[in-house]
Image (cartoon, rainbow, N blue to C red; front, side, top):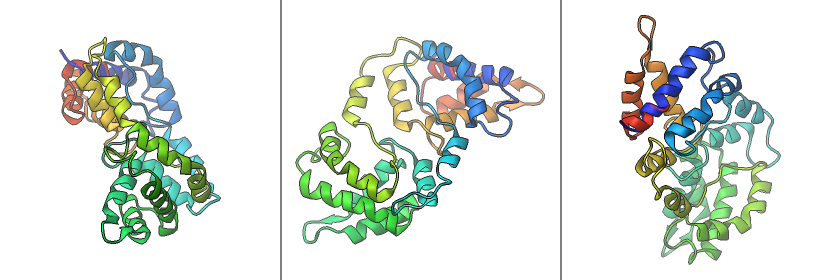
Length: 257
């Protein structure tokens, strides 16, 4: 009956088997390891690999050490919070949006304007944002043709990737990246073999992996929390309805989760 039902079944498995592991956080390594035992069943129901979450306790540990470049541990944490991907609010999308707004036909690419934009939208320091401003300037100078149709096309990303080592050296660590959006579209044009259609797969990829608000795993976890009551236990129907609505997927697909 739709995609969301796949995730409802996964939520029920977590409720029945992982309450202790997930008591402190839905994205702790213990919780994710426990729920991962249902992974193969979930993938079989969905028909493809849904977006996943990395353990948030490991992300915190990773950013407790100050980066060697211009981006501090707090900057790294903010970027990881926004996460990789091309969806609205993901770090690469915020960077691309600032790049677009920092160009004018009269003044060319304005690094100061870009730095101010990304520092504000991504909640990182201006010193850290200036690394990405320099990357944006490189893209403007060298990749205009490749990036003409889309900032996340494979041609555009391949061109800008030539600046990658310089960017990482400035940042001090690997920043969140974007996969080519034209490849993502091609991947979801084929209908999935399970309960999740190509449209469901496209919606999940749009929300993307990660633990930030609006990422698919976070939406699934939020629905799991709201579908439990002390009197009725875990309510799969309520979960399916919640995830189908929040993630914009069919109810049959949501039931897998």
